View 1 (spheres, rainbow, N blue to C red):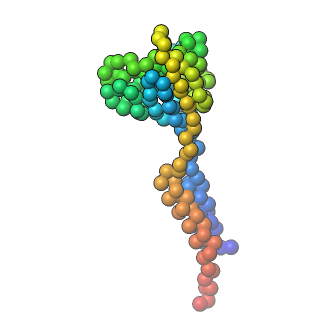
View 2 (cartoon, helix red, strand yellow):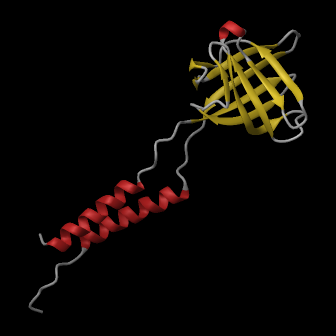
View 3 (cartoon, rainbow, N blue to C red):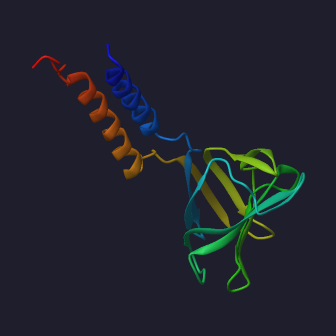
Length: 171
């Protein structure tokens, strides 16, 4: 094996490594139903914009479909079990609280580094009679087009390197 072949195989290996999809935090879909409806998606792990240890954390500008919201972005606050659990949906643009609920704690870990849990959760309106169901499920991940193109380049490079014919220096 000559130097050129080694370099070709190393390039193919590097391209194959670069084409591997990044391991991002899984994407979760949140579907709230009942007398108020909303849907949104977030990663399993989030970096809160605001948090109070042993109480709650808030994520700003969550994009989704929120009933009666003035825009598609709201602020979501999640409470731990000591604070009654559940969540709060706040329309910052209109300065309106859209929904406050009590229920189970929807995450594990600390308020500074929460991890959402999947499942179906029964929520009740804070100081009211509304009943809600929140379904949190993992969304199947789809590789980005850039990742797919890198993988294709890596495979083509490996195939090209393995199929390349040796040239006869005396020809």
